[in-house]
Length: 319
Image (cartoon, rainbow, N blue to C red; front, side):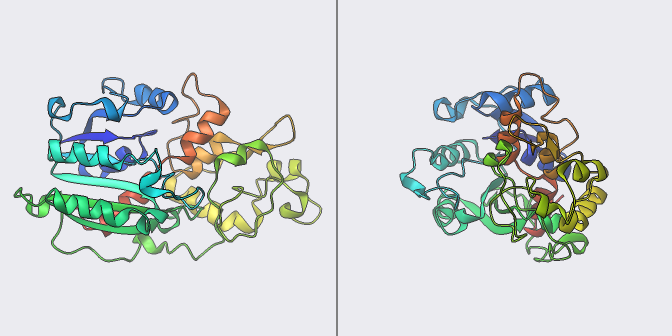
């Protein structure tokens, strides 16, 4: 089975689909040069066609599964939520690809805010194209991650094909997260944002609202009498320790240092953010030609593979 992937980023969604279905990437469509370097490093034989607006879909290699993490800015609560009026609204190009290529299965990912802004139009377009869709919001913490990171996943199967149980079960498997990870057993790390690498002293109240990944770092946030150096040396995450330990167990490696030295004080480590995303160590940060800020942006825009695998399971996609 072959995967065609639009707006691939660093390949987190494709890692999940590969693991879950056994399919392999046939081609990517990723226009950003930095994540494209990550793709070229890990899938050197897979072509990347770049600009989704310039592709003639009938000429593309046929695929079984199409994945897309189309730009979230039109729907994100972190932005102005202009939806269809945002110039970055690129869903119509994804719909064109689906209509022309007729994949057996479609896997889409976006911010949770897309559910209430634009999501209904996407499901409607899928129905118009002859695809039966299921959707739901799954948190990274549901898969054991140390931060909440709620995301909308939509899966759809071509109802004109005799896909049977190979791609979609007749009934979803239920909404209970696997392995008992409900996200409520520990204080979770707020999801990192692109601003977090600038070393700002923002406090966190552990509500998982957008903000700094950890207390970055204010002495009071580290515990009475602790300095930033003490925190780094002792690897003491304070109220977040249980969440950090849980994720370390899930992905099989301990958390790296969360901060690195910066001109204006400690700043968020890209390698730590990569760890939070559940990606292999160095997946982004060991790729040549990517700056620290670019690595953080790639991580911030990426997909937690373990979360996506759980979403596929819960939405009834067959392995």
